[in-house]
Image 1 (cartoon, helix red, strand yellow):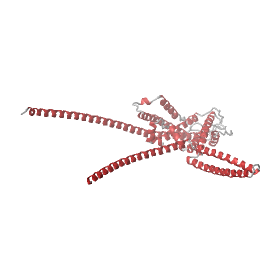
Image 2 (image 1 turned 90 degrees about the horizontal axis):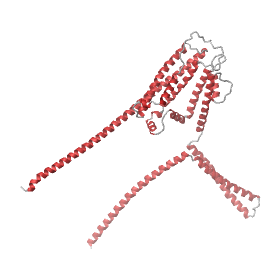
Image 3 (image 1 turned 30 degrees about the vertical axis):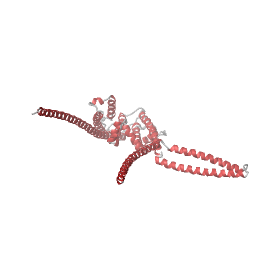
Image 4 (image 1 turned 60 degrees about the vertical axis):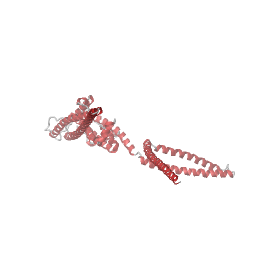
Length: 468
């Protein structure tokens, strides 16, 4: 054996070792890459599971808040209705003291108030959990700010005030009335506690909030989180007023008139000691609400005067709202403006044609009379005056036509025109790009055809050379 034959096995072993070590390194790198990808996928899966859990918890909390709000609204309205019935029973017997029926109704009001207060605590607990989930707070104490505590306390005080059942007077008869005159500052405690129960009507607004389409729509909620517009109660009320202005105004005025009229009935007393009738109270409140004030019926207590002052302020606000609703109702829509402007432009164009015809007619007449040496005649002066009036009328009609175009070209129309022009520009750019691609393909085909023609020509030349 030669030296080359002896060294050949050692070289093969060395090569095998190098290859095996390289394969091990490749496999280790590949396994590390697989591990990294697996870790990334596991992190993504955990993140998706966490986000899905948050979304599901938020949806469940929102549904529970909606149910609690429905029950609170029912209890609030029920308490107001029972309060009115109880007071009407006392008004009918002519005494502010309780009988068995009114005492029983007030007992039901107290029980419903206790349940309502418990639901208020539960509602704000759920609302605080929802706030923490939305803002990624780990503990509910972070979301319990001083402002939130203040509003919760005010809400509890508003809902806690109600007429309390007092001792019974079973010997009262239907004819027992108050015969002595009452002072102007007299207000029954029962009436004072009853009037504050109307503040529970805010629960109806919360009911409207949870049953609005904007509160249930996921896209609107996502848009609210991404933008600076919060979909709260005030925003939903504005959308209702924007969508149904007349309906919202009628409902608002009806509620205000009923509440204000009954409050006047409960506050005011007749000289006999009885409460004022509902018809007189409606008449007085309507006269004050519409800021007319006939003066034939006036409040007889400070409580009634306070109600009329509040009614006058709310009536001023309702009048302004009514004017805005009427102004919005009689405003021409976009297409109505286009039709109206088209009709006016047609009329102005017709008048311009008539005046232009008069200019030509009387210019020819002036020229004719001047040729006949009648420049000092009455016909010449009249024709010249009509000619100048027609020229002035044409200039005036031009300005009027220009003003019509400017007045009916509003800012929304300019925005719509800009949007349409942008769309048209984008379409033209797309068509231009497509045409450019097509032209490039045609250029490539012409280049290939040129090469083919050159090849054919060279082949023909070579064949001709062979023939010769």
